[in-house]
Image (cartoon, rainbow, N blue to C red; front, side):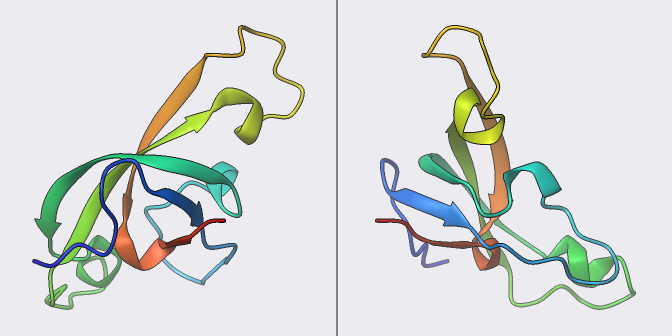
Length: 95
């Protein structure tokens, strides 16, 4: 597995709405965060859902988002965040 992003990298989730099974939540699409860690490489669940092999394996990242990045009306503390595990094919470099 060769991961495209390292921990600390600024990333943005693709703004896309494909048909069928999708593991990436709608509320984080088009939003920017920071890679917290690389979780490993796994078969792509979006392909597995339709009987495919899910290969090649895809790097899976835990990405940290500020709450206000996901929900602009968020009124809680500025340091509050959400961490979401997202496959590499959903991420692009931010900045």
